[in-house]
Image 1 (cartoon, one colour):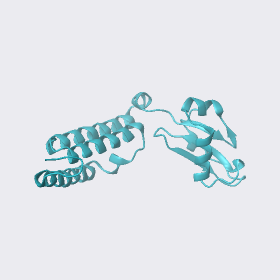
Image 2 (cartoon, one colour; image 1 turned 45 degrees about the horizontal axis):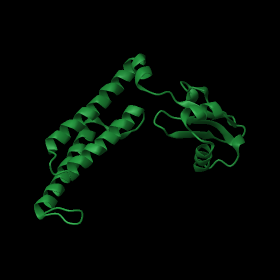
Image 3 (cartoon, rainbow, N blue to C red; image 1 turned 90 degrees about the vertical axis):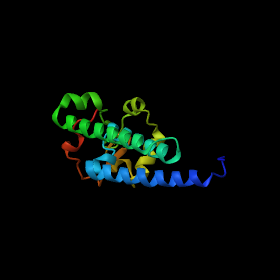
Length: 173
């Protein structure tokens, strides 16, 4: 009998075996496909990471799920991610279709309210990210970019430093 507090020994053993098998499987898949598997460099990478985590949890916790089904699902998701990454490197149109464009939220101390509104970023969110980046004065901020993954990049330095334009290529704003 299984309830919210206890489970039978066979269920506990099956859960432990499932965890070990699915974790070993994900380690093998990551070794085959490489570190990009969990890089979260793009929205597809981010979605893949979440999907793999969900599959891993489903196989580990649900004694009715087969290890093979979980392994195939993870292979398909990470395989798609790798194929999509390959396609983006070789076809510009695929990157334009499949990825969001980063958005400039701030440049040279000036906050772009319209870009923040379009991106759903509040003033409080921006200030929190600036504090995380140890910004002491807005005049230190050279650029703040809302990346395709949802991360916020803060480029800052002393008042004489300049951001190379190549770092801001492809950014909407």
